[in-house]
Image 1: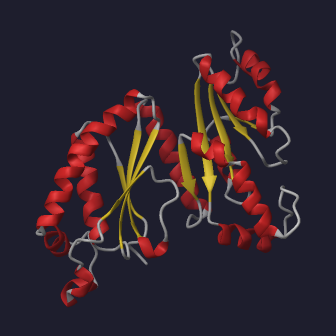
Image 2: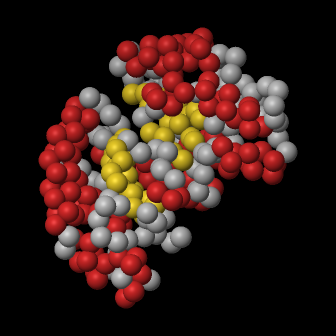
Length: 285
């Protein structure tokens, strides 16, 4: 049966770059297909001898005339038993504004008040689709190369595992929350290596910092309780058919405590039978 991936998201967040990645990986990419034609495309794709096993449907690049019909069309397709995934590309408003000002393109949402107002209106239009998404990728800090790597990794892991793809990311609250996080844990209450002169220049990847953070009774208690929580929710998410789960761990700057805790949580998740990726978003800042 044909596999479907809907590629949606904010204008300027990288849909064209993402579509090119899927095309390079053997997906048949269709731009701005009216939702009313989705059923007919599905029938053609699933005919005996059909050529298209993987369809990537990109929405929104030409406007949003058919947007109200898109969610019902996706649900109808899911009810047929087909494998359907929804990928949403996101970026902060200020970055989207800079991208539009840099390339001088018109925003597809026609509204008075300039680019920022158009972005805010588009965000409201896409709110429900974002909530429905299997995975949300924040491209604000990603280069085109970084985005390609992230997408290829998602595709390869999904193909090989066929189950729930999990990731753990450390971050610094002063740099903003990861927009694609499903679960967020705050470890700013733990002792901060930043205030230890010999540890300040190191990161949570260094053993001295790891030992300092994990020597705290609070860190041990946090990991113990997180273990209980994750043992409950990870299998439950998997049973419900969730394709992707992103766990975010934050400290102030994203270089010490959150890095240590993300590595520990990654090992914990791995011991539960999953194979998470662990990424440290702000470790080099």
